[in-house]
Length: 210
Image (cartoon, rainbow, N blue to C red; front, side, top):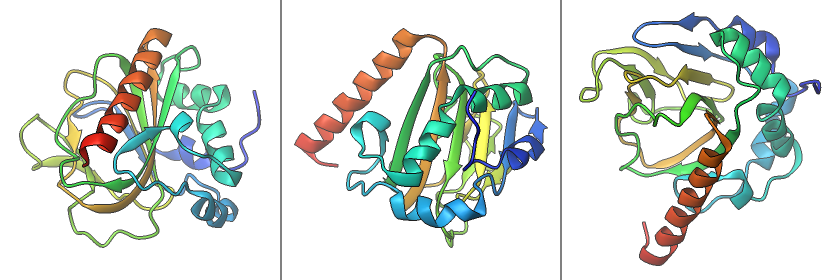
């Protein structure tokens, strides 16, 4: 397994795993300080809103190296150990978002094809008091009360095991909201299906607009 030079594995390992209302971990400073300027510089210039798969985006420099580390077996092993599951054998789907729309953030659990979802945020600051801050929720209807709120700032990591009650979402936000999402899937057929669905969604946005 390859060495990890951008992800701060000590910070990943130090992030506690909570089990209420479902299994999740919230960590900070998971990107090494000497890589942040390069990651900021190399973050893709994405004009479209929403998540794009990595094969739809021009990756370069230290940002590409970060994606390689997030998708690596070495990182899957470390994250899997935190949750007590095997992630190394799971296919990975990585998507990137730069711009958010007001319609994003509705409360959901993620689909059953996902085993675990990871979010790494890359915004220098976040002034919105509530909008755009992901929340761990207790049901599929209410943004309050919440178990924890995730600041979408540089180097913040949030990961959770998908479950029937893994409710999460954020209040509407429009504007720049940089985040990388990695989903570990149950099988390879799900990986291709999700890639195709995402490409179709982006194509339709191009035709019909936002």
